Amino acid sequence: MTQAHIDLWQATGPTTREHILRFIRWAIKAKLVASDLEVSPHRRGNAPRMSIAQQNAVIEQVAHQQTLQPRDRLFAILIIVFAQRAEDVAALTWDKITITADTVTVDLAGLPIHFPPPLDEPVRALAAGNYNSQTAAHRNSPWVFRGYTPGKHVGPAHLRSYLRPILAALEARLGTLNELTQTTPIAVLAETLGYSPQTLEAHARASASTYARYVATRLD
Image (cartoon, rainbow, N blue to C red; front, side):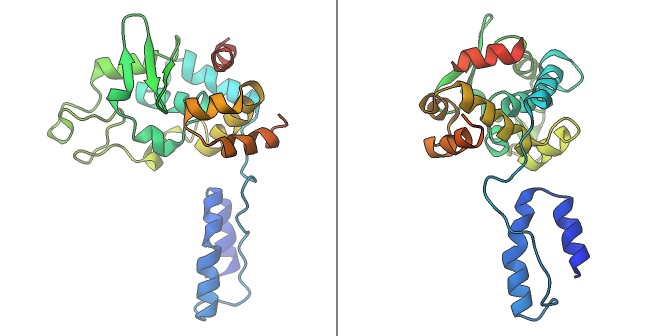
């Protein structure tokens, strides 16, 4: 392993690759690699954030256009509009979703959130299409995002890879949190989206800083 290998690996992946620093230190101590190898250290709060202009462009694409599959549209909406973690989205179950002729609500953190049109379209399409359920692997499966392993939901990395041409999940989520903390009280966001108040306060400070008004504004 050379410094060029490390630099390339870090440059072509997410910021979490910086956590390799501990392994490199161990490898140097064990004399398995050169002692002068360096890794850019991981620092909280330095991940890139999607700008508001980029966010609006992505929202336009996933909310108003039919260029993506319903599953991918819903995954993108949950991240870019509602700032959900990819891991939580992948594990979403149908008992958290209520669909009527007039409304669609999704329970993200113990509270139902109304999905106004056109945000409700991919939810209705997934429910009507019974996505990936007509197999022995997923008969009566509770997962919204069903995987290809019996009884399992799709992995978050798999969902991220599908959306990579449209958005980087972490960058999009952090950008959305920055915007949300400027328009919505921290306590409301924490309770509605399932974040800790401390996490949201950090985002509020970073962005120099009601929820329904925010959603309506993003869809105009």
